[in-house]
View 1 (cartoon, rainbow, N blue to C red):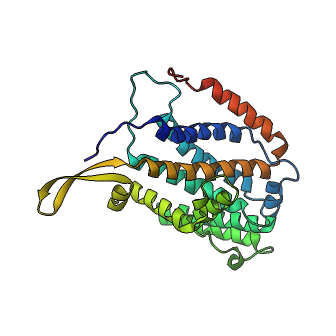
View 2: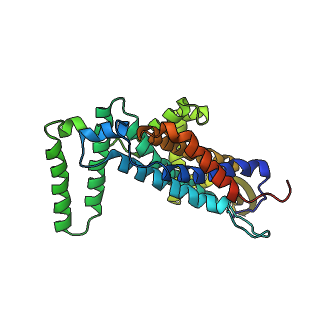
View 3: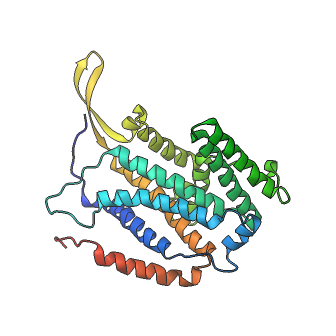
Length: 295
């Protein structure tokens, strides 16, 4: 049985900080236009002009921000009634955070290559993986055949420069998330333990298990207190979402998204304007955030 408890201000403050960060990132990203001449994205696209790497990265980051701004509207609405109550259950925040982490990690993984050619290779991995997933989801043999041919066309266009064996495959969400988390941790944008792949894997698996209704996250991500014995050895329990678990997965999502958006701005050639863009976004956000009546 779920048990309701009041969440104190010190607990909810980091949740609200992540919420406002997602709104800020959405505004910043909206002001990063087309890659400028000579930017990193232009160099990546030169290796494979048919699909622009900047478009793919923007889509990954936009998806992550959309997940987190939905959380923002829940935990820190910009308009609310004085008597309104917000009820936090553990599954939605874990699920939204996981989706944001996976989305943004693809962009970070792509941009983390150590050369324009390596970044282009990673981009092509994502293009081919996308086509494979689209084919699996397709209805009808004709549609599946067309998507197989589309995949082959991509490879044929690349053949003068790189073959399928050299391209390799997208390493999967788990590995992309681990690499992104380690990158963020090294840059000092998140808790130091995000550099530990075991910690990150546990966060990812717990959030995935939550989304799928698995029992072990329901026990490990909540504070479980035994109650009356309902049968020999079987006890009723009161379960309350663990605020610490919520904070940890939110911080990972925010860290990967923040790094991804700033890296995207840099790769698009917008570093000289970035301070101005961020400052304007901060002023805009500050103007709409409701003020606490007790301050």
